[in-house]
Length: 453
Image 1: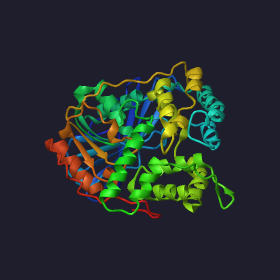
Image 2: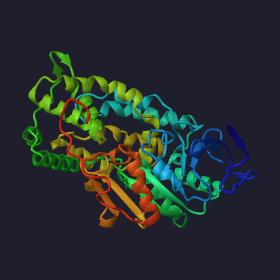
Image 3: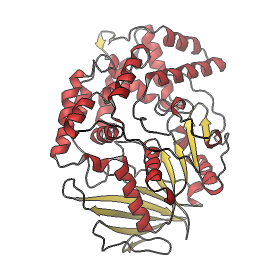
C-alpha cells in the first residue's frame, strides 16, 4: 500500500513551507513490515548553478510516533548517499533519514565531466607529482568543463550540503537531530555542528575525516603498516618477517609478469584502495609480498583491474570538486609527495591532487576550509588498520573515553561488517551517552592471503 502525503511530514504530520521562495518539499509514505518508509524530495531554488534549481531525494525510516531523528551521512565524495538501510537495532529507538548529496547519484544536478576519468587513465610509473604531470591538462579541462556547464563550485561544498540537511530538518519538523556519519559524512556532520550547534543532540562518527583528511600522508600510512606488522608478529604469523622485510628493504616494483606489462603505479593505487577494509586488505598485501619476490599474478591482476576501478568506482567529477574545495592546499600536497619518496605506497594523494594549480586557475581559489572541532556529545569509532582515516590523524582534542578503536578492522568494517551490532553501539551512545570500548569484540588479525577474510 502506498499513501501519498502532501508536504514533508513528521509525527504528527507537518506540511512543507510550500510558499517559500527558496524551496519546496514533497513526500510519500510506503508501509512496510515493522516500520514505515517515506520517500520524498526537496526542491531548492535560488542557486546560481545551471538553471537555479536543484532537487534532492531522501528516504525516512520510522517505527513510531515522536521518535528522535538520526541523519545518516555516508562516505565519498563521488558516491551516492542513498544506499544505506538502517539496522533494526537503530530503528527501534530512532527515525533515520537518508538524503542524497547534491552533485551525485540521484541529485537533479550531477557533476559530470569525462576529463577526470581520462586523467586517471593516463597514470603510469609511480605515485608522485612528477609522474602526474601528464594528468594535469586533463584536470584543467575537467574543472573548466564543469564551470562551462554553469556549475558554481562553492554551491557543491561541504557547507552547502550542511545547509541542505538544515533545510530538511526544518521541513520534517525535528527540533534537534543526531548524526550517524561515516568518512566523508563525518566531515559534513562536523561542518553542520559548527554552523548549527543548537540543532545537534549527539553524533556517532565512524572513520573520522577532519579538515585536511582527503590528503593521505605517507608517513602516517607507513606508521600504520608497522603497527600491522607488529600485530602479525604477535599473532605468530609466518607472514610477519616477509612483511617486515618489505617495509624496511623494499625492492623496485616489477613492471612485467612473464613478459606482459604490469604498471606499478596502477597496481599500487589499486592495492592502496583495497587495504581500506579487512576482507580485501589481505589480498592486497599478499600481492605486494609476491611482487617483491618477482613474478606475481596478483600484482599483475591489480595492474590490469585498475581500469575497471576507474570506470566504475566513483563519480570522479564529484570526488575531485568536493575534495579540492575542502582541502586544496599546495603545502599539504607537496609535503605528502615528499613523504612518499621513501614509503611503501609512495603518495596516492599526489595523483588525486596533482591538479591543484589548474583548480586555482579555473576557480580562483586553492585554500582549505577550516572547521572548528566540537566533540561535545560525540563518539568516534576508528578501525585500527584504516589507511584512509588512520589513528595517527585523530585530533588530540578528542577525549579518550569518546573514542573506540576496533582491533584489526579497516575503514568501513566497524559500521558495515555487522550492522546490527553497530546499531546497538550507536543507539546506546545516542540514548545514554555510553560507549563500551570493547563493544565490537576481539577480531583476529587478518593475514596477507590470496582470499577475502
